[in-house]
Image 1 (tube, protein in one colour):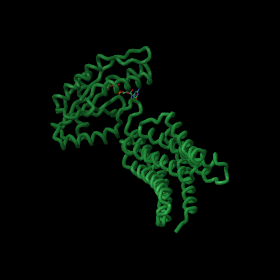
Image 2 (spheres, rainbow, N blue to C red):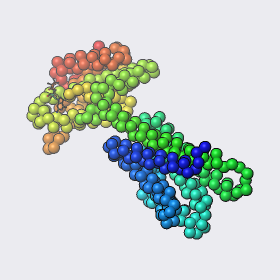
Image 3 (cartoon, helix red, strand yellow):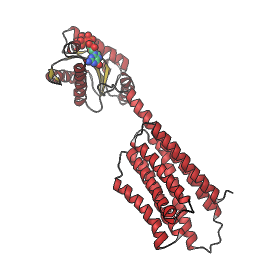
Image 4 (tube, helix red, strand yellow):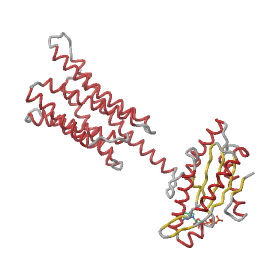
Length: 383
Ligand SMILES: Nc1nc2c(ncn2[C@@H]2O[C@H](COP(=O)(O)OP(=O)(O)OP(=O)(O)O)[C@@H](O)[C@H]2O)c(=O)[nH]1
């Protein structure tokens, strides 16, 4: 069986390796605040562990400062976790964690000298900090990265439990020194669990980073950069979902195809940046008017699509008419300009054409074409 010194060496090596891994990941991955906190926390804790291992150094260095830095490092990691979960750990709490991590070993060094006391007290503190990390992840991460959150949460819980067990085990040994029990297996298992937990935490945190980047990229690929609403790809993905759910629930869905009239004139008279500003304001106006269950997308150029959930042809035409009147009554403002413009809208409903996005789009587009032909600034229903 491995002896305690070898396991300790394994622990220190794993700490250094995982620290390196997190630091490189944070440097490569755009330096988000939580990633910086994780990397810095691990660097600080590693320095603390190295100081703690320097037996020949003065007590104040290896038995006080070392623990203080480990505690501060764990506090920084916790701060990063809270940031990831959309919460904040105030700097005063971070300072308090660091101060407590210095104070506890100092008490057991100078006031009530006891190596066991020092190990038990810091073990409990560090164990609780790791358990707090698991709790923050379990309660705070509610977005699409939740499935991978479990890896690091399990790592923090395992590390917290191992440190608390070690503290409990030391306390028991202290209270019953005469107990006839071979302690080496328990101690080895606990020491083995610590590096295992560290690796789990490091890989879990890197998986969280990767998952959040993947999610951000996915959002970006579905979003129109000018207006911030769905783009065509977003419409196809989210629209298909909306139609599927509506079909399952037996709700009708209507599709509005909306196009700004004579938009070329706005660009030609006032320039492209003004045209962009008009499109942004149009998108904003439309999304302010719609229900959260509806879907707005920029179909291309100056053309938008609105999917109205639980809406038949008659209701959708009323909504389209309301939108048309509102746009006509609300000129777009850009710099000192006030630009009045109108929109034409084609309306198609699943009542006539089924829950098929492509068919609804094509029918609404035909109706829009008719609206343009008939003189613009009007709503036409697809039959
Ligand atoms: N500023 C700006 N203009 C755009 C953008 N996308 C498309 N356009 C312009 O929108 C105009 C569309 O012109 P047309 O297709 O002739 O349509 P229109 O002038 O609106 O005329 P009708 O649709 O027939 O009423 C073109 O001038 C495009 O350059 C954009 O992202 N920003």
